Amino acid sequence: MTTPTTEDRDTELSADRRRNRKRAANIADHAGIGWKLMLFKVIALGLIDALAVYAIFVLWRSDQLVPAAIVLVVTGFANWVYFSRGNLPAKYLVPGLVFLFVFQVFAALYTGYVAFTNYGTGHNSDKDSAVNSLMLSAQERVPDSPAYALTIVEQLGEYSFLVTEPDGDVLLGGEERPLEPVDGADIDGGKAVGLAGYNTLGFADIVANQKAIGDMSVPISDDPNDGALRTPDGSMAYVYVSNLVYDEAAGTMTDTRTGVVYSDIGTGAFTAEDGAELRPGWQINVGFDNFVRAFAEDSIRGPFFSVLVWTFAFAILSVLTCFALGLFVAIVFNDPRMKSKKYYRIVMILPYAFPGFLSALVWAGMMNQEFGFLNVVLFGGADIPWLTNEWLAKISILIVNLWLGFPYMFLICTGALQAIPEDVQEAARVDGAGAWQVFRSIKLPLLFVSVAPLLISSFAFNFNNFSLIYMLTGGGPRDASANVNVGATDILITMVYKVAFVGSSSDYGLASAFSIIIFILVATISVIAFRRTKALEELN
Image (cartoon, rainbow, N blue to C red; front, side, top):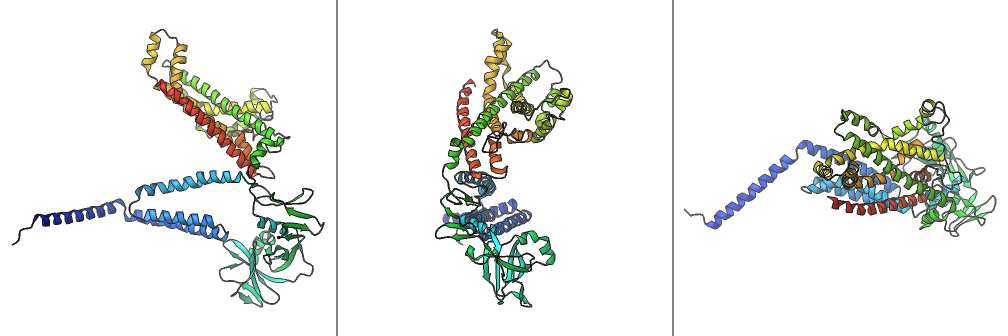
Protein backbone atom coordinates (compact mmCIF):
# COMPACT_ATOMS: atom_id res chain seq x y z
CA MET A 1 0.00 0.00 0.00
CA THR A 2 1.51 3.29 -1.12
CA THR A 3 1.36 6.41 1.01
CA PRO A 4 0.10 9.56 -0.77
CA THR A 5 2.86 12.05 -1.21
CA THR A 6 2.60 15.73 -0.43
CA GLU A 7 2.40 16.50 -4.15
CA ASP A 8 -0.54 14.08 -4.59
CA ARG A 9 -2.39 15.64 -1.67
CA ASP A 10 -1.84 19.14 -3.12
CA THR A 11 -3.16 17.97 -6.50
CA GLU A 12 -6.28 16.47 -4.93
CA LEU A 13 -6.80 19.63 -2.86
CA SER A 14 -6.51 21.82 -5.96
CA ALA A 15 -9.03 19.64 -7.82
CA ASP A 16 -11.43 19.83 -4.86
CA ARG A 17 -11.08 23.59 -4.82
CA ARG A 18 -11.82 23.82 -8.55
CA ARG A 19 -14.90 21.62 -8.13
CA ASN A 20 -16.07 23.70 -5.21
CA ARG A 21 -15.59 26.94 -7.16
CA LYS A 22 -17.51 25.52 -10.11
CA ARG A 23 -20.29 24.28 -7.83
CA ALA A 24 -20.45 27.68 -6.11
CA ALA A 25 -20.58 29.46 -9.48
CA ASN A 26 -23.43 27.21 -10.62
CA ILE A 27 -25.32 27.83 -7.39
CA ALA A 28 -24.78 31.58 -7.77
CA ASP A 29 -26.00 31.47 -11.37
CA HIS A 30 -29.14 29.56 -10.43
CA ALA A 31 -29.76 31.80 -7.44
CA GLY A 32 -29.13 34.97 -9.42
CA ILE A 33 -31.56 34.32 -12.28
CA GLY A 34 -34.53 32.01 -12.39
CA TRP A 35 -36.52 30.76 -15.33
CA LYS A 36 -39.15 33.48 -14.86
CA LEU A 37 -36.57 36.23 -15.08
CA MET A 38 -34.94 34.55 -18.06
CA LEU A 39 -38.33 34.29 -19.79
CA PHE A 40 -39.01 37.95 -19.13
CA LYS A 41 -35.59 38.88 -20.50
CA VAL A 42 -36.12 36.84 -23.66
CA ILE A 43 -39.57 38.34 -24.26
CA ALA A 44 -38.39 41.90 -23.59
CA LEU A 45 -35.35 41.60 -25.82
CA GLY A 46 -37.48 39.86 -28.45
CA LEU A 47 -39.83 42.84 -28.59
CA ILE A 48 -36.90 45.26 -28.73
CA ASP A 49 -35.25 43.22 -31.49
CA ALA A 50 -38.52 43.12 -33.45
CA LEU A 51 -38.83 46.91 -33.24
CA ALA A 52 -35.18 47.28 -34.21
CA VAL A 53 -35.58 45.02 -37.24
CA TYR A 54 -38.64 46.98 -38.34
CA ALA A 55 -36.78 50.26 -37.87
CA ILE A 56 -33.78 48.97 -39.82
CA PHE A 57 -36.04 47.86 -42.67
CA VAL A 58 -37.82 51.22 -42.81
CA LEU A 59 -34.54 53.13 -42.69
CA TRP A 60 -33.07 50.93 -45.38
CA ARG A 61 -36.12 51.46 -47.60
CA SER A 62 -35.65 55.22 -47.09
CA ASP A 63 -31.94 54.99 -48.03
CA GLN A 64 -30.97 56.02 -44.47
CA LEU A 65 -28.09 53.54 -44.35
CA VAL A 66 -26.02 55.15 -41.58
CA PRO A 67 -28.89 55.29 -39.02
CA ALA A 68 -29.83 51.74 -39.99
CA ALA A 69 -26.26 50.58 -39.33
CA ILE A 70 -26.25 52.38 -35.96
CA VAL A 71 -29.51 50.71 -34.91
CA LEU A 72 -28.12 47.32 -35.97
CA VAL A 73 -24.86 47.75 -34.03
CA VAL A 74 -26.58 49.05 -30.87
CA THR A 75 -29.16 46.24 -30.93
CA GLY A 76 -26.46 43.61 -31.43
CA PHE A 77 -24.40 45.07 -28.58
CA ALA A 78 -27.43 45.09 -26.25
CA ASN A 79 -28.18 41.44 -27.03
CA TRP A 80 -24.55 40.50 -26.35
CA VAL A 81 -24.59 42.36 -23.02
CA TYR A 82 -27.81 40.84 -21.72
CA PHE A 83 -27.34 37.28 -22.96
CA SER A 84 -23.71 36.90 -21.90
CA ARG A 85 -22.55 35.95 -18.44
CA GLY A 86 -21.09 38.74 -16.37
CA ASN A 87 -21.03 42.29 -17.72
CA LEU A 88 -23.16 43.30 -14.74
CA PRO A 89 -22.26 47.04 -14.85
CA ALA A 90 -23.04 47.16 -18.58
CA LYS A 91 -26.49 45.64 -17.98
CA TYR A 92 -27.39 48.66 -15.86
CA LEU A 93 -25.59 51.26 -17.96
CA VAL A 94 -26.84 50.35 -21.45
CA PRO A 95 -30.48 51.62 -21.07
CA GLY A 96 -29.34 54.90 -19.55
CA LEU A 97 -26.66 55.42 -22.19
CA VAL A 98 -29.12 54.72 -25.02
CA PHE A 99 -31.66 57.22 -23.68
CA LEU A 100 -28.90 59.73 -22.97
CA PHE A 101 -27.66 59.52 -26.54
CA VAL A 102 -31.13 59.64 -28.15
CA PHE A 103 -32.69 62.40 -26.06
CA GLN A 104 -29.66 64.50 -25.13
CA VAL A 105 -26.55 63.95 -27.25
CA PHE A 106 -28.30 63.34 -30.57
CA ALA A 107 -30.78 66.19 -30.00
CA ALA A 108 -27.96 68.62 -29.18
CA LEU A 109 -25.81 67.53 -32.13
CA TYR A 110 -28.73 67.66 -34.55
CA THR A 111 -29.69 71.14 -33.33
CA GLY A 112 -26.12 72.27 -33.95
CA TYR A 113 -26.20 70.75 -37.42
CA VAL A 114 -29.52 72.41 -38.35
CA ALA A 115 -28.21 75.81 -37.17
CA PHE A 116 -25.76 75.80 -40.08
CA THR A 117 -28.37 74.98 -42.73
CA ASN A 118 -31.34 76.72 -44.34
CA TYR A 119 -33.68 73.97 -43.14
CA GLY A 120 -37.26 75.23 -42.90
CA THR A 121 -40.44 75.71 -44.89
CA GLY A 122 -39.58 75.42 -48.57
CA HIS A 123 -36.13 73.96 -47.78
CA ASN A 124 -36.86 70.66 -46.06
CA SER A 125 -35.54 68.06 -48.53
CA ASP A 126 -32.73 67.33 -50.94
CA LYS A 127 -32.42 68.73 -54.47
CA ASP A 128 -33.83 65.66 -56.23
CA SER A 129 -36.97 65.75 -54.07
CA ALA A 130 -37.34 69.49 -54.72
CA VAL A 131 -37.06 68.95 -58.47
CA ASN A 132 -39.69 66.20 -58.37
CA SER A 133 -41.99 68.35 -56.26
CA LEU A 134 -41.67 71.29 -58.63
CA MET A 135 -42.33 69.11 -61.64
CA LEU A 136 -45.36 67.54 -60.01
CA SER A 137 -46.81 70.88 -58.91
CA ALA A 138 -46.92 72.11 -62.54
CA GLN A 139 -48.32 68.96 -64.15
CA GLU A 140 -51.03 68.92 -66.80
CA ARG A 141 -52.65 65.94 -68.43
CA VAL A 142 -51.31 65.10 -71.86
CA PRO A 143 -54.06 65.45 -74.50
CA ASP A 144 -55.06 62.07 -75.94
CA SER A 145 -52.93 60.29 -73.35
CA PRO A 146 -53.12 56.50 -73.57
CA ALA A 147 -55.13 54.87 -70.79
CA TYR A 148 -53.27 52.44 -68.53
CA ALA A 149 -55.20 49.73 -66.71
CA LEU A 150 -54.48 50.29 -63.02
CA THR A 151 -54.63 48.31 -59.81
CA ILE A 152 -53.80 50.00 -56.48
CA VAL A 153 -51.65 47.80 -54.24
CA GLU A 154 -50.27 48.37 -50.76
CA GLN A 155 -47.23 47.21 -48.81
CA LEU A 156 -46.31 48.34 -45.27
CA GLY A 157 -48.77 51.21 -45.49
CA GLU A 158 -47.34 52.53 -48.78
CA TYR A 159 -49.50 52.64 -51.91
CA SER A 160 -48.17 51.67 -55.34
CA PHE A 161 -49.48 51.64 -58.91
CA LEU A 162 -49.64 48.20 -60.57
CA VAL A 163 -49.93 49.30 -64.19
CA THR A 164 -50.79 47.26 -67.30
CA GLU A 165 -49.62 48.99 -70.48
CA PRO A 166 -51.70 48.80 -73.68
CA ASP A 167 -49.18 46.30 -75.08
CA GLY A 168 -49.59 44.03 -72.03
CA ASP A 169 -46.40 44.81 -70.08
CA VAL A 170 -46.83 45.06 -66.29
CA LEU A 171 -45.08 47.84 -64.34
CA LEU A 172 -44.91 48.78 -60.65
CA GLY A 173 -44.09 52.17 -59.16
CA GLY A 174 -44.70 54.46 -56.22
CA GLU A 175 -44.72 58.12 -55.26
CA GLU A 176 -40.94 58.38 -55.38
CA ARG A 177 -40.23 55.13 -57.25
CA PRO A 178 -40.33 55.24 -61.06
CA LEU A 179 -42.22 52.51 -62.88
CA GLU A 180 -40.26 49.28 -63.32
CA PRO A 181 -41.20 45.99 -65.03
CA VAL A 182 -42.30 43.16 -62.71
CA ASP A 183 -42.83 39.46 -63.25
CA GLY A 184 -45.29 37.06 -61.69
CA ALA A 185 -48.27 39.39 -61.50
CA ASP A 186 -51.76 37.89 -61.33
CA ILE A 187 -53.53 38.58 -64.64
CA ASP A 188 -57.30 38.67 -65.04
CA GLY A 189 -58.82 39.64 -68.38
CA GLY A 190 -55.55 41.10 -69.65
CA LYS A 191 -55.12 43.30 -66.56
CA ALA A 192 -52.69 42.81 -63.67
CA VAL A 193 -54.83 42.51 -60.52
CA GLY A 194 -52.30 41.38 -57.90
CA LEU A 195 -48.66 40.87 -57.07
CA ALA A 196 -46.96 38.62 -54.55
CA GLY A 197 -46.02 40.51 -51.37
CA TYR A 198 -48.60 43.28 -51.98
CA ASN A 199 -52.20 43.69 -50.84
CA THR A 200 -54.69 44.62 -53.56
CA LEU A 201 -57.10 47.42 -52.60
CA GLY A 202 -60.76 46.83 -53.29
CA PHE A 203 -63.32 49.42 -54.31
CA ALA A 204 -64.23 50.27 -50.70
CA ASP A 205 -60.56 50.76 -49.76
CA ILE A 206 -59.99 53.02 -52.77
CA VAL A 207 -63.01 55.15 -51.87
CA ALA A 208 -61.86 55.42 -48.25
CA ASN A 209 -58.41 56.60 -49.37
CA GLN A 210 -59.39 58.43 -52.55
CA LYS A 211 -57.64 61.69 -51.62
CA ALA A 212 -54.28 60.03 -50.94
CA ILE A 213 -54.57 57.95 -54.11
CA GLY A 214 -55.75 60.90 -56.20
CA ASP A 215 -52.76 62.96 -55.04
CA MET A 216 -50.28 60.25 -56.06
CA SER A 217 -48.01 60.92 -59.01
CA VAL A 218 -45.84 58.00 -60.09
CA PRO A 219 -42.82 58.92 -62.29
CA ILE A 220 -42.66 57.10 -65.61
CA SER A 221 -38.83 57.04 -65.52
CA ASP A 222 -35.85 58.53 -63.71
CA ASP A 223 -36.08 61.54 -66.00
CA PRO A 224 -38.74 63.88 -64.51
CA ASN A 225 -39.29 65.43 -67.94
CA ASP A 226 -40.89 62.17 -69.11
CA GLY A 227 -43.91 62.89 -66.92
CA ALA A 228 -45.85 60.76 -64.46
CA LEU A 229 -48.99 58.66 -64.16
CA ARG A 230 -51.98 59.86 -62.13
CA THR A 231 -55.43 58.42 -61.64
CA PRO A 232 -58.80 60.12 -61.21
CA ASP A 233 -60.72 57.01 -60.16
CA GLY A 234 -58.25 54.31 -59.08
CA SER A 235 -58.96 52.07 -62.09
CA MET A 236 -57.27 53.90 -64.99
CA ALA A 237 -54.09 56.02 -65.08
CA TYR A 238 -53.08 58.74 -67.54
CA VAL A 239 -49.87 60.55 -68.44
CA TYR A 240 -49.25 63.99 -66.97
CA VAL A 241 -46.30 66.22 -67.92
CA SER A 242 -44.98 69.32 -66.24
CA ASN A 243 -44.88 72.88 -67.54
CA LEU A 244 -41.39 73.03 -66.08
CA VAL A 245 -38.45 71.50 -67.91
CA TYR A 246 -35.44 70.49 -65.85
CA ASP A 247 -31.92 70.53 -67.35
CA GLU A 248 -29.75 68.56 -64.94
CA ALA A 249 -26.50 69.35 -66.77
CA ALA A 250 -27.09 73.11 -66.76
CA GLY A 251 -28.80 73.12 -63.35
CA THR A 252 -31.78 75.10 -64.67
CA MET A 253 -35.56 74.89 -64.54
CA THR A 254 -37.42 76.48 -67.47
CA ASP A 255 -41.07 77.49 -67.38
CA THR A 256 -42.45 76.57 -70.82
CA ARG A 257 -45.43 78.90 -70.41
CA THR A 258 -43.41 82.09 -69.79
CA GLY A 259 -39.94 81.11 -71.02
CA VAL A 260 -38.35 82.23 -67.72
CA VAL A 261 -35.22 80.29 -66.80
CA TYR A 262 -34.55 79.60 -63.12
CA SER A 263 -30.98 78.64 -62.23
CA ASP A 264 -29.32 76.96 -59.28
CA ILE A 265 -27.12 79.76 -57.91
CA GLY A 266 -26.20 78.01 -54.67
CA THR A 267 -28.94 79.43 -52.45
CA GLY A 268 -30.97 76.25 -52.18
CA ALA A 269 -33.62 77.24 -54.75
CA PHE A 270 -33.97 77.80 -58.47
CA THR A 271 -33.72 81.57 -58.93
CA ALA A 272 -34.58 83.80 -61.89
CA GLU A 273 -32.55 86.85 -62.94
CA ASP A 274 -35.00 89.18 -61.19
CA GLY A 275 -34.54 87.27 -57.88
CA ALA A 276 -37.81 85.34 -58.01
CA GLU A 277 -37.50 81.81 -56.60
CA LEU A 278 -39.28 78.56 -57.27
CA ARG A 279 -40.50 76.86 -54.12
CA PRO A 280 -39.91 74.40 -52.70
CA GLY A 281 -36.14 74.62 -52.61
CA TRP A 282 -33.76 72.21 -50.90
CA GLN A 283 -31.60 72.06 -47.82
CA ILE A 284 -28.02 73.30 -48.06
CA ASN A 285 -25.22 74.27 -45.69
CA VAL A 286 -25.22 78.04 -45.16
CA GLY A 287 -22.39 78.29 -42.65
CA PHE A 288 -22.85 81.08 -40.10
CA ASP A 289 -25.55 82.88 -42.11
CA ASN A 290 -28.25 82.20 -39.50
CA PHE A 291 -26.10 83.68 -36.74
CA VAL A 292 -25.28 86.66 -38.95
CA ARG A 293 -28.99 87.20 -39.61
CA ALA A 294 -29.72 87.16 -35.88
CA PHE A 295 -27.28 90.01 -35.22
CA ALA A 296 -27.07 91.88 -38.55
CA GLU A 297 -30.54 91.85 -40.15
CA ASP A 298 -32.41 94.88 -38.79
CA SER A 299 -35.85 93.29 -38.80
CA ILE A 300 -34.50 90.37 -36.71
CA ARG A 301 -31.79 92.08 -34.65
CA GLY A 302 -34.13 94.66 -33.08
CA PRO A 303 -36.75 92.16 -31.86
CA PHE A 304 -34.01 89.72 -30.83
CA PHE A 305 -32.28 92.22 -28.54
CA SER A 306 -35.63 93.37 -27.11
CA VAL A 307 -36.50 89.78 -26.30
CA LEU A 308 -32.99 89.21 -24.89
CA VAL A 309 -33.27 92.19 -22.51
CA TRP A 310 -36.73 91.13 -21.34
CA THR A 311 -35.52 87.54 -20.87
CA PHE A 312 -32.74 88.68 -18.52
CA ALA A 313 -35.09 91.07 -16.73
CA PHE A 314 -37.75 88.39 -16.32
CA ALA A 315 -35.27 85.77 -15.06
CA ILE A 316 -33.56 88.13 -12.60
CA LEU A 317 -36.78 89.71 -11.28
CA SER A 318 -38.41 86.30 -10.97
CA VAL A 319 -35.57 84.98 -8.82
CA LEU A 320 -35.35 88.15 -6.67
CA THR A 321 -39.09 88.49 -6.03
CA CYS A 322 -39.66 84.79 -5.35
CA PHE A 323 -36.61 84.59 -3.09
CA ALA A 324 -37.55 87.75 -1.18
CA LEU A 325 -41.14 86.64 -0.54
CA GLY A 326 -40.13 83.04 0.18
CA LEU A 327 -37.46 84.16 2.65
CA PHE A 328 -39.85 86.57 4.36
CA VAL A 329 -42.52 83.89 4.82
CA ALA A 330 -39.88 81.38 5.98
CA ILE A 331 -38.59 83.81 8.62
CA VAL A 332 -42.11 84.54 9.83
CA PHE A 333 -43.09 80.87 10.08
CA ASN A 334 -39.74 79.96 11.64
CA ASP A 335 -40.51 82.09 14.66
CA PRO A 336 -41.11 79.77 17.64
CA ARG A 337 -43.84 82.08 18.96
CA MET A 338 -46.14 81.36 15.98
CA LYS A 339 -48.84 78.79 16.63
CA SER A 340 -50.22 76.18 14.15
CA LYS A 341 -47.29 76.70 11.78
CA LYS A 342 -47.75 73.39 10.01
CA TYR A 343 -51.20 74.36 8.79
CA TYR A 344 -50.01 77.71 7.49
CA ARG A 345 -47.12 76.01 5.72
CA ILE A 346 -49.51 73.65 3.95
CA VAL A 347 -51.48 76.63 2.67
CA MET A 348 -48.28 78.36 1.53
CA ILE A 349 -47.11 75.45 -0.61
CA LEU A 350 -50.48 74.87 -2.36
CA PRO A 351 -49.50 76.95 -5.45
CA TYR A 352 -46.43 74.72 -5.81
CA ALA A 353 -48.58 71.58 -5.65
CA PHE A 354 -50.61 72.37 -8.78
CA PRO A 355 -49.18 71.98 -12.32
CA GLY A 356 -47.66 75.27 -13.50
CA PHE A 357 -49.32 75.24 -16.92
CA LEU A 358 -52.75 74.70 -15.32
CA SER A 359 -52.24 77.58 -12.88
CA ALA A 360 -51.13 79.82 -15.76
CA LEU A 361 -54.34 79.01 -17.67
CA VAL A 362 -56.45 79.80 -14.58
CA TRP A 363 -54.65 83.12 -14.13
CA ALA A 364 -55.15 83.89 -17.83
CA GLY A 365 -58.88 83.50 -17.33
CA MET A 366 -58.84 85.61 -14.17
CA MET A 367 -56.98 88.40 -15.99
CA ASN A 368 -59.24 88.43 -19.02
CA GLN A 369 -60.01 92.04 -19.91
CA GLU A 370 -63.75 91.52 -20.48
CA PHE A 371 -64.96 88.85 -18.04
CA GLY A 372 -61.96 88.06 -15.83
CA PHE A 373 -62.35 87.77 -12.06
CA LEU A 374 -59.91 90.59 -11.35
CA ASN A 375 -61.68 93.16 -13.51
CA VAL A 376 -65.26 92.09 -12.83
CA VAL A 377 -65.10 91.39 -9.08
CA LEU A 378 -62.04 93.04 -7.55
CA PHE A 379 -62.04 96.21 -9.67
CA GLY A 380 -65.80 96.61 -10.07
CA GLY A 381 -66.04 95.98 -13.81
CA ALA A 382 -62.93 97.96 -14.80
CA ASP A 383 -61.49 97.47 -18.30
CA ILE A 384 -57.85 96.78 -17.40
CA PRO A 385 -55.84 95.16 -20.26
CA TRP A 386 -53.78 92.86 -18.05
CA LEU A 387 -52.58 90.66 -20.91
CA THR A 388 -52.89 92.88 -23.99
CA ASN A 389 -50.95 95.96 -22.88
CA GLU A 390 -47.18 95.59 -23.28
CA TRP A 391 -46.16 96.71 -19.78
CA LEU A 392 -49.18 95.37 -17.90
CA ALA A 393 -48.62 91.99 -19.55
CA LYS A 394 -45.03 91.92 -18.27
CA ILE A 395 -46.17 92.90 -14.76
CA SER A 396 -48.87 90.22 -14.91
CA ILE A 397 -46.29 87.60 -15.81
CA LEU A 398 -44.11 88.58 -12.85
CA ILE A 399 -47.12 88.48 -10.50
CA VAL A 400 -48.19 85.02 -11.66
CA ASN A 401 -44.61 83.75 -11.54
CA LEU A 402 -44.34 85.08 -7.96
CA TRP A 403 -47.47 83.13 -7.07
CA LEU A 404 -46.03 79.97 -8.60
CA GLY A 405 -42.41 80.35 -7.47
CA PHE A 406 -42.35 81.65 -3.91
CA PRO A 407 -43.43 78.30 -2.30
CA TYR A 408 -40.27 76.67 -3.64
CA MET A 409 -38.11 79.43 -2.17
CA PHE A 410 -40.12 79.22 1.04
CA LEU A 411 -39.33 75.51 1.39
CA ILE A 412 -35.60 75.77 0.73
CA CYS A 413 -35.22 78.87 2.92
CA THR A 414 -37.08 77.14 5.76
CA GLY A 415 -34.72 74.21 5.60
CA ALA A 416 -31.65 76.45 5.38
CA LEU A 417 -32.75 78.61 8.33
CA GLN A 418 -33.42 75.58 10.50
CA ALA A 419 -29.93 74.26 9.69
CA ILE A 420 -28.20 77.37 11.08
CA PRO A 421 -26.79 76.53 14.57
CA GLU A 422 -28.71 78.32 17.30
CA ASP A 423 -25.59 78.79 19.42
CA VAL A 424 -24.03 81.04 16.72
CA GLN A 425 -27.06 83.32 16.79
CA GLU A 426 -27.16 83.26 20.61
CA ALA A 427 -23.49 84.26 20.80
CA ALA A 428 -24.18 87.23 18.53
CA ARG A 429 -27.08 88.34 20.74
CA VAL A 430 -24.88 88.06 23.81
CA ASP A 431 -22.36 90.34 22.10
CA GLY A 432 -25.10 92.95 21.72
CA ALA A 433 -26.19 92.35 18.08
CA GLY A 434 -29.76 93.27 17.24
CA ALA A 435 -32.21 91.18 15.24
CA TRP A 436 -31.34 92.98 11.98
CA GLN A 437 -27.59 92.60 12.59
CA VAL A 438 -28.00 88.89 13.31
CA PHE A 439 -29.98 88.45 10.12
CA ARG A 440 -27.67 90.55 7.91
CA SER A 441 -24.32 89.35 9.27
CA ILE A 442 -25.02 85.76 10.26
CA LYS A 443 -28.23 84.29 8.89
CA LEU A 444 -28.11 85.73 5.37
CA PRO A 445 -24.45 84.76 4.60
CA LEU A 446 -24.98 81.25 5.99
CA LEU A 447 -28.25 81.06 4.09
CA PHE A 448 -26.53 81.89 0.81
CA VAL A 449 -24.10 78.99 1.30
CA SER A 450 -27.01 76.56 0.86
CA VAL A 451 -29.29 78.62 -1.34
CA ALA A 452 -26.91 80.23 -3.87
CA PRO A 453 -26.62 77.15 -6.16
CA LEU A 454 -30.41 76.82 -6.10
CA LEU A 455 -30.81 80.48 -7.02
CA ILE A 456 -28.54 79.91 -10.02
CA SER A 457 -30.58 76.90 -11.14
CA SER A 458 -33.76 78.92 -10.59
CA PHE A 459 -32.35 81.65 -12.84
CA ALA A 460 -31.60 79.08 -15.55
CA PHE A 461 -35.13 77.64 -15.20
CA ASN A 462 -36.81 81.04 -15.51
CA PHE A 463 -34.53 81.93 -18.41
CA ASN A 464 -36.30 79.10 -20.26
CA ASN A 465 -39.71 79.25 -18.53
CA PHE A 466 -41.67 78.37 -21.65
CA SER A 467 -44.94 77.15 -20.13
CA LEU A 468 -45.69 80.29 -18.09
CA ILE A 469 -45.14 82.73 -20.98
CA TYR A 470 -46.90 80.63 -23.59
CA MET A 471 -49.91 79.68 -21.46
CA LEU A 472 -50.45 83.14 -19.98
CA THR A 473 -49.86 85.58 -22.85
CA GLY A 474 -48.69 83.48 -25.79
CA GLY A 475 -45.77 85.92 -26.00
CA GLY A 476 -48.11 88.77 -26.98
CA PRO A 477 -48.94 91.45 -27.70
CA ARG A 478 -47.51 90.87 -31.19
CA ASP A 479 -44.73 93.08 -32.60
CA ALA A 480 -46.01 93.79 -36.11
CA SER A 481 -42.77 95.47 -37.23
CA ALA A 482 -40.63 92.37 -36.64
CA ASN A 483 -39.62 90.05 -39.46
CA VAL A 484 -39.98 87.10 -37.08
CA ASN A 485 -43.01 86.00 -35.09
CA VAL A 486 -42.32 87.70 -31.74
CA GLY A 487 -44.28 89.62 -29.11
CA ALA A 488 -43.63 91.99 -26.21
CA THR A 489 -43.59 89.28 -23.52
CA ASP A 490 -41.74 86.61 -25.50
CA ILE A 491 -38.56 85.29 -23.94
CA LEU A 492 -35.89 83.62 -26.02
CA ILE A 493 -37.27 80.11 -25.73
CA THR A 494 -40.81 81.11 -26.80
CA MET A 495 -39.38 83.13 -29.67
CA VAL A 496 -37.44 80.05 -30.79
CA TYR A 497 -40.63 77.98 -30.65
CA LYS A 498 -42.55 80.52 -32.73
CA VAL A 499 -39.81 80.84 -35.32
CA ALA A 500 -39.69 77.06 -35.66
CA PHE A 501 -43.32 75.97 -35.40
CA VAL A 502 -45.82 78.86 -35.40
CA GLY A 503 -47.09 80.65 -38.48
CA SER A 504 -47.32 79.84 -42.15
CA SER A 505 -43.55 79.39 -42.53
CA SER A 506 -40.97 77.80 -40.28
CA ASP A 507 -37.26 78.57 -40.14
CA TYR A 508 -35.65 75.69 -38.26
CA GLY A 509 -32.13 76.88 -39.11
CA LEU A 510 -32.64 80.30 -37.50
CA ALA A 511 -34.46 78.74 -34.53
CA SER A 512 -31.56 76.32 -33.98
CA ALA A 513 -29.11 79.22 -34.13
CA PHE A 514 -31.14 81.00 -31.44
CA SER A 515 -31.09 77.78 -29.37
CA ILE A 516 -27.30 77.64 -29.51
CA ILE A 517 -27.13 81.30 -28.46
CA ILE A 518 -29.41 80.53 -25.49
CA PHE A 519 -27.21 77.59 -24.50
CA ILE A 520 -24.06 79.71 -24.64
CA LEU A 521 -25.67 82.47 -22.54
CA VAL A 522 -27.04 80.17 -19.86
CA ALA A 523 -23.87 78.07 -19.69
CA THR A 524 -21.63 81.14 -19.42
CA ILE A 525 -23.74 82.75 -16.69
CA SER A 526 -24.00 79.49 -14.76
CA VAL A 527 -20.26 78.82 -14.87
CA ILE A 528 -19.43 82.34 -13.71
CA ALA A 529 -22.07 82.23 -10.97
CA PHE A 530 -20.99 78.84 -9.65
CA ARG A 531 -17.38 79.99 -9.49
CA ARG A 532 -18.41 83.07 -7.54
CA THR A 533 -20.36 80.95 -5.06
CA LYS A 534 -17.17 79.11 -4.12
CA ALA A 535 -16.26 82.17 -2.05
CA LEU A 536 -19.27 81.44 0.14
CA GLU A 537 -17.85 78.05 1.09
CA GLU A 538 -15.28 79.79 3.28
CA LEU A 539 -18.14 80.77 5.58
CA ASN A 540 -18.45 77.12 6.58
